[in-house]
Amino acid sequence: MQVSGCLDSQKVHLMHWLGKDGGFPWKLVVTYDDQRAREIYDDFRSFTENVWLYPAKDLLFYSADIHGNLMTRQRIAVWRHLMEEKEGVVVTTLDGLMDHLLPLVFLKQQAVTVENGQIMDLDEWKERLTALGYERTAQVDGMGQFSVRGGILDIYPLTEELPVRIELWGDEVDSIRLFDVESQRSIEKIERFEAFPATECLLSEEEIARGREKLQEELAGQLTAFGNDKKKKTAEDIEKCNRIRRNVADMERIGDYSKALRMFAEELTGFLSYFPKEDTLFVLDEPNRLNERMELILYEYTESMKNRLEGGYILPGQTDMIHGIESIYAGLEKKRTLLLSALDYKPEKFAVAEYVRIDTRSISPYHNSFEYL
Image 1 (cartoon, one colour):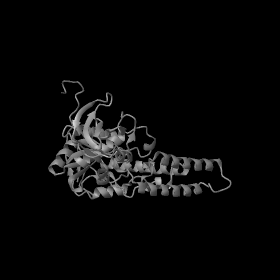
Image 2: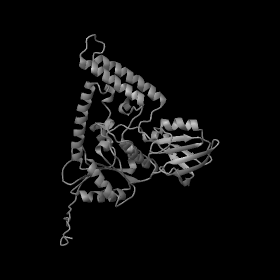
Image 3: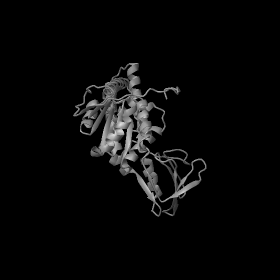
């Protein structure tokens, strides 16, 4: 359904009440840029507390972005709400639908739980937390870390405001407490604790082994394409060969295969699949602007991947890391979708079953003029 004639200040009001009367406990709102997403998020907080902003990765420069784990924390926090809550609103940009993700069911299965009185093998937990993306440190002072000191295990999940201290009596959990990072003092005792992954790229040992084989196969093929087997090579060819070797070696040394996820993971999906089909209203803010944004993203991404491949910065298997227009729109056509636009136009690439035109009037801002107020 398309509703036209509504101004930006009125769209959130429509999203909230149309979805509520239609029996949709979940809403996914997709807009065209980060600023507009923040505006929608702020407006929605006037109607419900269960609203979350889902940040999109920079599809071109994410691997070079000095963002720490803040973005990962925000994204995983939204995934956790989708796993645990029964209703809510998620606001994102079109970019948030385009990257490949592991299935939500798989991510939920990776969470680990500990309760008072539980028998715990510390060695197993060390391996498990490392596999979940946590970094072992001497003392926990940041999110995504864990430490072991004698019979005490400290964990600071990305999805929690405070870290957790688990004290053991032998191999039995004696107490679970929240504690302050700066003072390292306990704050509150809890009965149960659940740690979610600290990384988006969770792979089994078998997947890593198979993926590394693919990496080496593609590396050999790319070196041949750059003329590594030739006796006479130009300085540019030599630099390309050295560069692609370094890139693959760095990936294997760090163990971060997110930049080549499709070569490792057996099953991948998109953010749209994280929402229950029958219980979700999918809202597209200004569909034609979304089309323009997607075409620009795909053009820039395609050109960037082409140049990086030719320069020896990536392997061929790393060039197809996003969902295209057809894939995203095909997924939306099978769901309950609401299109909102200020102007009355027929949206491109969407087959609209019902059109609704509304007449609205905006109120002029008074700009500190009490006569207008």
